[in-house]
Amino acid sequence: MEQKREQQQVAISVRDVKKVYKLYDKPSDRLKETFGLAKNKHKEHYALNGVSMDIYQGETVGIIGTNGSGKSTILKIITGVLNPTKGEVTTNGRISALLELGAGFNQEYNGIENIYLNGTMMGFSEKEIEERMPEILKFADIGDYVYQPVKTYSSGMFVRLAFAVAINIDPEILIVDEALSVGDVFFQAKCYHKFEEFKKMGKTIVFVSHDLSSISKYCDRVFLLNKGNLLGEGSAKEMIDAYKRVLVGQYEVPVQKDSENLLTDGELNMAALQAMGQNPEKLEYGTKQAEIKEFYITDDKNVRTTAVIKGTKFTLHMKVEFRERIVAPIFAFSFKNIKGTEITGTNSMIEKAFLEPVDAGETKEITFEQNMSLQGGEYLLSLGVTGYAGSEFEVYHRLYDVLNVTVVSDKDTVGFYDMGSLVEVKTIKTIKDEKVIPYRQEA
Image (cartoon, rainbow, N blue to C red; front, side, top):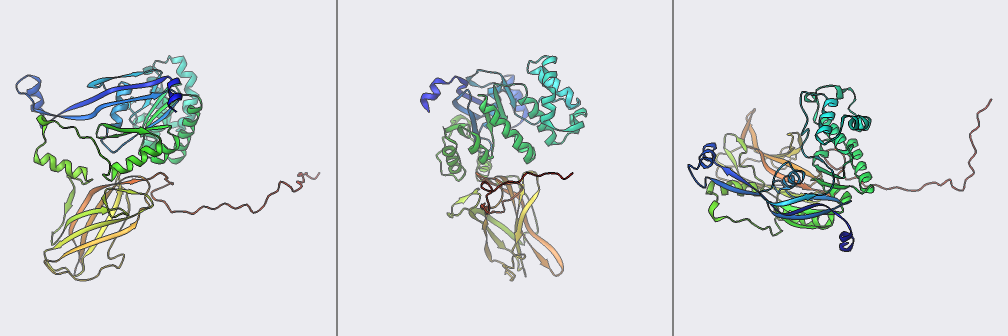
């Protein structure tokens, strides 16, 4: 493999790239520092910390990592949308990038006008755009909406048109950032078929995705980022395995230390909560006659985690303190996707698991054990303790979107969850040795 790479030309070279953002507590601090009225009013955040990588012509390369790892930042620096704080990037070939949904589109223009706008920005003449127009419209397949202002488009229409433009301008390097997760399954299939065509044509593809099954299927090589650091590169399987270890906290991650920009106790607490997947700005309410004091998830090895591998068992734990006697408390949980759609959930009353009174001063530990059948992706967990006082429904304590749970999957089916189908194909008959009588129409 190394010998083959030596013969390949480098399409993208990234050398010791750092991207540092100055974070200010309030706008006035930025102003004071700008005009020299105060010093060191900011904290430095390393979105990228000395990242180097070579991507060769004809490769399909994936970049994976947790949220905030620097994936989108490195793509924006490669495409010139952002400038690095330090380091350099060189590219060899025409780049077409699909970084953000509808980026570069004028909301007031219709689809046709935006195709011309984007094509012109990429350096094409009007004649060249006209030649590519039929192929763009065919691939986008949004019908007469192409004559309507793009501000009326759904997110799916946006990505169809944007992707159709990006791949039909004959790029030598195609860069895609998560955009394919917006289209429907048929459009995604068409896009990945185009990836296969591009690979055969020797084009370079770089894409960021949380869809590990796509990463595994299409990528020749994968880079793993975490908190701005490049943890490693290798085959899709090697890096996906390493990514799973990062998700469950079993991978040593380099830490950027800066003694001059230490976080306050409050900031450290918020950072710690976020590192554990907890929402520091959670929505909660209730009478607090019973209160959820602790909650966490364990995997099939009884290790605390916020990442669950699809197809394995996991257990949700809740610890609830009771300040008053409650006749029949109900313990509940539910999962939403990041768009806020309720996907699944249950409670102790539905499951007929606990229908007893609890006295004041008692603490109960509740566990829900089940298989993880949700598709790979990010989900939000909500928890609750409710009940009835006579005929009146009471909410004692509710925590909405309190925990971010990542489902890690290398095989996703269609829809929200996997039915766990067992597929079997049998040969019951073969006609290769049978005489086939041609159909003859009677006069």
